[in-house]
Length: 331
Picture: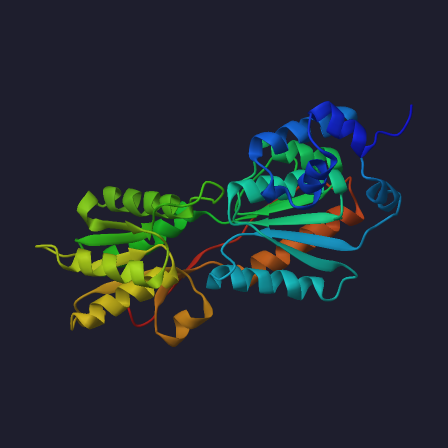
């Protein structure tokens, strides 16, 4: 059987050769419907670009990729530091692919599953569709999601609902009965909804204590210091404002802290504040928070990935990392 060429793919998909090239090299620049049509033909014909066919015959390419959104978030920076530290002693080169849309995520996965330019792939804070997972498995790219379990792949996870419970239990133990929450809204469709899970655990713990969390005590806004500050002001302007607020990230907790100080409130005397993540700056501002082991999650992800690359028969592992309530000055 003759080698399938880019001309065959273009003809069968009804597109130009340049469009096929963009699907493989700049997939985010191709309309999703066109990209999926081209990918369906590539899957059907088993097309492999010539250069990648040569590379595929090698034992290893020496490259590990990371697909990550929100690269400016402190939590993602710390997790990525764990990845880079763990890879520094290995022979693998790290390549980072930034994700800012579902189209870019799907495009990267579609392209990598055909070109196979990586030995392994780590996904940080991203969901993975069944189609995308199947493509990566078929391509033989060892893949490891952080925070998102996926059948057939190892993963590193935390229990976000437990984190919400830890925050609630700490505040309840201090005698608070009017509690608020600040979290994310308008999350992109490619992101994992950790805020919702942390809220669910927080709400459940309050319910078990005989308390409700009214809608007006929940402040949701796009992630950021300023939006959290605004939500903090809104909650503190209620006729009966909360005496404690749990924010689903340290960034948002610091926005609430700023709002409290602008109103002349004593923290934790008038308002207790708990965050989530325990990023480096949390200790410097005395923030009580739910610590997740960010750098360790990146390091463990690399260790699991390299173990599977060294021995593909090794069963996939789901590693759950513990959460800890770190008590400081704000609560």
